[in-house]
Length: 122
Image 1 (cartoon, rainbow, N blue to C red):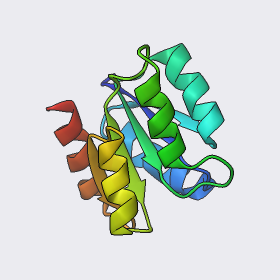
Image 2: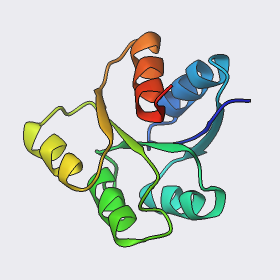
Image 3: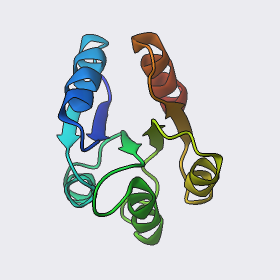
Image 4: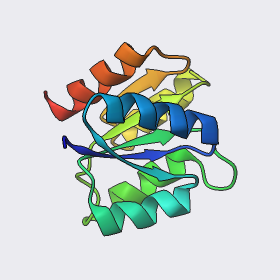
């Protein structure tokens, strides 16, 4: 099994799609439906990379990135921000908060795999 990837997205079908694509490419996938659940899994599992949706109810992906930066235990986990919004200000803020890379929805299976490999340096 390849690298372990934590997927944080409130849309169940997006989680299932990303899991299918990444598991098919040989990765181990963990799913979280909220920022809180994502942070908990980050601290427990210490995955190799986390994908974060920016637009989630309650605490956003930006909130998650900010909390990651504030916590030395999870600060160094690489992050791929996945967003449908594409609002430049949000993407710039994500980069300031330490996002390793960004990927806009909709994306192809190959774009997702390429983005993951790029972040992991594969």
